[in-house]
Image (cartoon, rainbow, N blue to C red; front, side):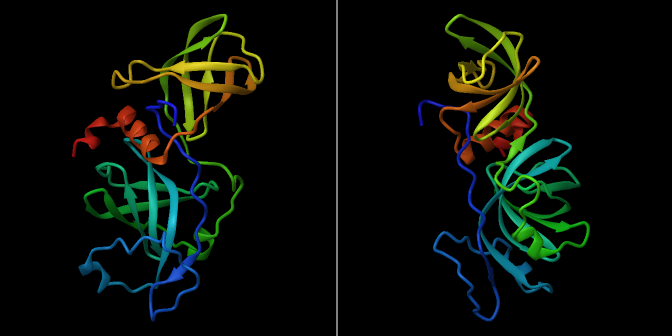
Length: 236
């Protein structure tokens, strides 16, 4: 990392599923997380529950869009780990990297872990093995905030329109060339936003697609998102 206070990292690979019952193991590795449901909930399970390797996703609610990591899933629900307290909304949508979205209802919370019930029937195998329209696309959040864009010839004010661990879509009145190196900073975020270097990958009018020279870790990306949308969740 090169002094980044934003955050983003390479998308975690899709993991294999492992049956959690009768000791049947179909290929879990040491990176596998343990089941995230409380002990009392374990006795009440009806549907078979899969245990997944780490899978990044996002939870969309009335308070914004937040990064989470899926821990396990069954036909009835899913448990996730977040990097902050769960937003206090009554309904969410779980968005997968491939583009699929599943309405979910919060059931329990313990520190930064949370359980949700699917609001509609789901195909568990399809959720686990989903490829979708964008199988290699990282988690992208609709984060909007002002920035300063600098080049060797000058600087101007711009705005981030959405962001992933690897890059961002911005608007900027300055004419930028494809593959041009730029520096962006957002000094208003927590008073500690440092300069981030990026390259221009595409241009459409005043909109530009940037790829960061150094990607953000998943945890930093998640904390940036909550800081911009619901900073009180970091203190709970």
